[in-house]
Image (cartoon, rainbow, N blue to C red; front, side, top):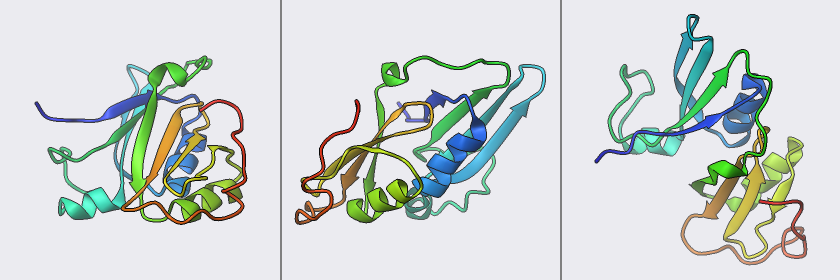
Length: 154
């Protein structure tokens, strides 16, 4: 068995790319626009996964074994309800506090702050839960995260 990707449907491709690329730091590695089917597929991978596998991001087709997220934008879709029915996507990060501060500075709500220096949740523009896990040992508790409560669901 070979892992290929996780797919999430998005209602606004530009807003989603801002979140996943500018916010989380993922890189677009492939895009497919299908005029007949009226949809766009965008495949994203983390820079660390690209580097670890020796991939440049220019390979066609995508390299086997590269963990990816596929954003599916159906051009005529009016919107999707919920988002929680997907579950969540998870990434291990180098500095959970820095990434949460970066996302918060972009206007995203940290639904479950990294109070323990180890785990946080944030939601994408389509309400997909994104779990962030600190690489290695948990960071020492730090403000403003240590005393921050949860916001909404995650």
